Image 1 (cartoon, rainbow, N blue to C red):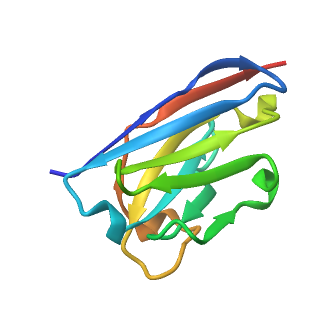
Image 2: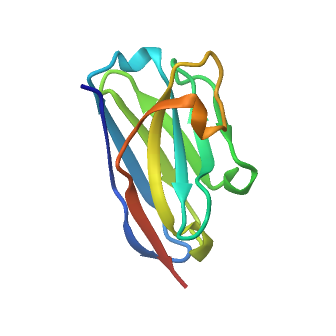
Length: 124
């Protein structure tokens, strides 16, 4: 049984930093590309960042470039999302997901497994 479990969310102030973690089990972690998505109330789920199997290649949504960093530790079966200079617009539930595609995809339909999400709330 595949499980992706996010953690690290919380309530922070604008300008603060936060690091999310996603621990994977039940799959050969190093063979899956990993992504982070987010969904705010009343909005569609949107791509945040992705990382390839090896961790060498990453890709970010334009609004996250320079503020967010995705990384992974295949020895710990964990993917991370370091978020800096947080803004109230970053308030959302953040989800990690696993994709079997060869390249990083920004389309949520490309991801087979999903975590339950962790809430990030940024106050102004």
